[in-house]
Image (tube, rainbow, N blue to C red; front, side, top):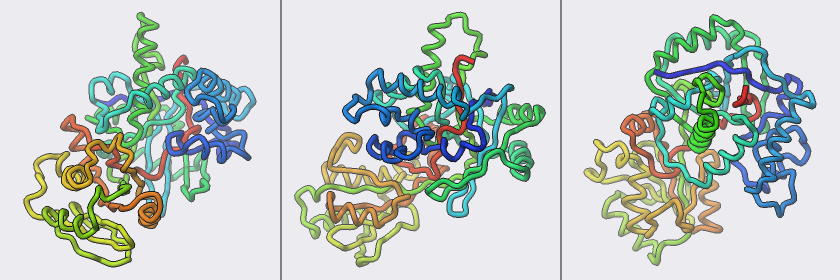
Length: 414
């Protein structure tokens, strides 16, 4: 059963929330981050990517970067822009994008639930990315960005969400990308208890987005346990920050591929190789967006093609092999293009569906040569793989909208 725990959030005062709230650190590079904070000294990017306040020549992983992050975080409170709750609290957080709403509960979840696979994963993590966030969390003594979790629905949770979303919000603002962000404080202690009780009846939580942040938060918690051998389990370092959304409200976007070359093939030779396992249909210059599983778009030399897997190609009993990202990798990208490890091969890149198919054409016409458009992975596939303790191929899912950082800070030493 799942643990949901209220916490004494440090959060922006109402009049500063729009200035402080920022996109998460991992959707921008340092140059983009510097541009984004140019006219906004309050942006939480100053905490999440503190190199923006150091010379451009600074090592991104130097002690100075993490020390600056901690200093910037503390200054937001010391200078009166943020304040801490006096009692442990939960929150309701709604985002609306293109008319679609997703509404979640903000609270803390358990390090032990992560270790015991109550919180289920579907991706491998990279040690270098973990190391960066471990140092950041440790230096800040805080979880500064929430983990994006999902769960199968609960009527009890739905009833409390409905109660608060009908009331007056604490925050309500629209970010530059057009996303509406609304937050309600769960002010009634009985409702806080009802939510924690409801999640005690939820069998599993699933990481939708934020595997590296989750792994790093857990490892900091384990480090603090080693430093405090008499810990009771109630200390804040035994928990980490998350937003929990019901799975049927979420949408996974396509995560498309662009390739640098044809691996020595001509276009006719490439099509002939594809036709061994796929039905290939030219569709002209109009961008092709797959409308069902096991279909793909391919673009090269100004021409789009529709690809459909031939009968018998897909093992529908295998939750990983039946993913479209697996089909493309195992039957096209590896055997035809010679790209066996898409994590490390520089001949392949990945384009989130939020950028649209025009971005695929742009890339294939400039720094790359060919693009594939994908049908999105489904939430059912994600949860089936996590339930089976398996992992997805890299770059299988793209979630939008992204959870903002800086709205809620969870201190580990409270």
